[in-house]
Image (cartoon, rainbow, N blue to C red; front, side):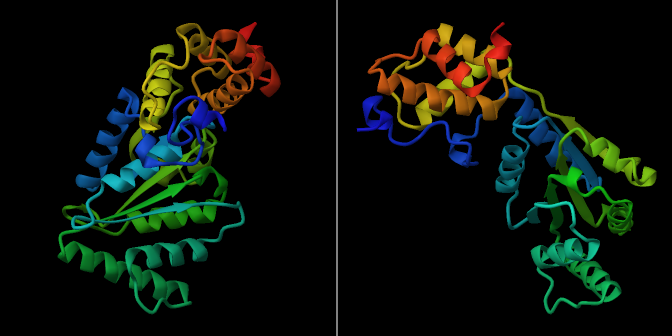
Length: 274
């Protein structure tokens, strides 16, 4: 037996792997999605989502991608995994995701292919959307200038491509590497940590999705979870997962604040409890 069976759960409720089924549509994320949809539908060109570590940027990006109907949008999500990415690599990825065939190695020819594909999409009455996660890692003036070049592709109706950047607060400095690009930001969204009420709703929501039919965490436990995580979703998941394991090992039917206190100390998160 593990804690799933012990607490009557069908699956792990607090995994930090992004899973759309567990998406928690709090007011801030709901408003953010509407703003991003507005930016894309009106062909504004560039939208930016900024948030601290663990506040749900990638979750929001995946959710936005899921909500874009394939019959109306040609959409893709790219994740920057290291800082040595070149503009050539990015353009090739853009071209692949946008459906360009027989991609050329020459950069000028590749840009021409991208332009032609964007024109085809426009003729099909589809909007091109490319989301890029972890953009703060692209700390390069050249790449920022290249992004600006893409946004220069436009028609009287608006931009031919919509870019949505997701990144840590450092993204502000990266955008400043090319002031004209920074001035092209049409929509800027700042994600924040959850409030205590949001934290309570979030925990209960994930437990419900995982098949829980009762209250496992006491109100005092959730209050302590909020204090030690400061409302950061990724940390909430980690604390709750460990608390369920600790509760199972101690054969407790309900997670109280004492269990959360033990977990917070083990994870080094007890500083927020002082």
